[in-house]
Image (cartoon, rainbow, N blue to C red):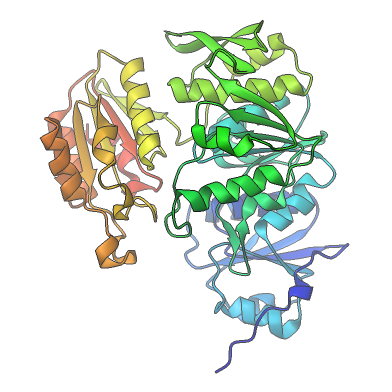
Length: 478
């Protein structure tokens, strides 16, 4: 049977939209967008395969009707617009319904640009690492300064207990993702956002399911910067040679940040003054201010520095920025302390890329030098479950006292010859004289931790997924 194609002419958002259906609504960003659209007075319905907490309860609490499973019947009422999530495939029955009923459709980034950014100043945070944390700090600093920004970010901001806000201010803060937009638009999501201010935190190889190699990744970021208007402002991390090459010859206004003598925004005199990460900032070689944050690690100093640069460029004083940064409570799942039981601290972190793992392990060890550090790692992304970083991961756990590596839970998704081996990682760690252990499931890790940990230890859990609710289960048994 011939598969009908979407009409590109219907890939447009009508001037007036009173009702929206969202296909694959239960993703973090899609769910936040659904709630934001409802706040703007639009009637929102949604569907997904696997409707479960916390997103199901989040949407239900806002009165948004979500149907389990995809069906043409979900679009029978004829919504003004269908927003198609990134996870939706061409053969989805709701795509067929869009074609048959000749409905207007768009991707999530298109909808974000139209309904959340509108005519606001767009602040877009891009880069392989640090997007969520940097976006969150920027959104909080602007809010603290009374700017009431709109924002949509890939993590829950503890200060708001939310990852979105429809503000009344003149700016919108967005996490700029290089991942592709939709099955009908293979361009990067951040191409849709047209930033007035952007941050580029660094560029490395990631998303092995859609990018061929590092050169492919760099080409996408190169387009992102190339498309910026000459009047737009780019805050670029100069500690990454890939970024340095990318910004060369670009026409937008560029300000670098980092720790180099010639960094336009430079962090110096950094130190740990528990519970704060403290640093001073020089702007174009002149003293700008002294700042502190409860976020730990050198990488979070850079995230904070980028946010300082953004806020200062928007006219916020160093004093207000310093107050706001000290009051920033962090992002859930980013070095989030989930609890302490019998003296054992359980920390949750989203780290999965080798660089993120390395920086997170180093940050936690440096902040708690007297503690034994158990690094618990679950490779579950489309990249970490591939062998592409197999030989790089072993050096990333230096500083941990004990390393626990779980078998990837969804390994069957990866072609057999390309699969990551947790057993090999553990063997390589042992070759580095590390106390490393392989586990086939989460229950084994919980039993091991309950038997081996003692008061003063830290369990650092690193995964981009729920990890079978290991955090709460550990706190129950410790």
